[in-house]
Length: 120
Image 1 (cartoon, one colour):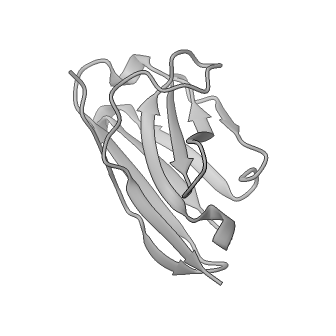
Image 2 (cartoon, helix red, strand yellow; image 1 turned 90 degrees about the vertical axis):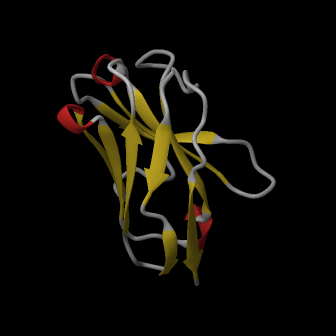
C-alpha cells in the first residue's frame, strides 16, 4: 500500500512561485511514471505534469513553460516547481503514479493534496 503526502502549497500573489513536494512510501516509486494533478472548485481533476521513471516530462498546455516537474528516486519524492502563478492555478494539487507513462490517470489511492491559492 503506497501512501502519498503532498506539501508546499500556500497563498501566493500572482506572478509568484511555489515548489510542491510529494513523498511516496513503498518500493514501487522508482519504476512508475509520476504525475501532478490539480482540482479546482467545481472542476474535474486534471493532469498538469508527468514524468517517466527515466525523467522524460510532459505538461498540460496551460502550464507549459511555467511549471517544472522533477523527481528524486533515492528520496521517493516528486516535485513541482511552479512559476508565474496566476489565479487560474488556484486548486488542490495532488501527485500520483500514472497508469502508464502516456496515461492521464492516477494509479494509487489519492493523498490529501496541498492547497495552492493565487491572489490577483
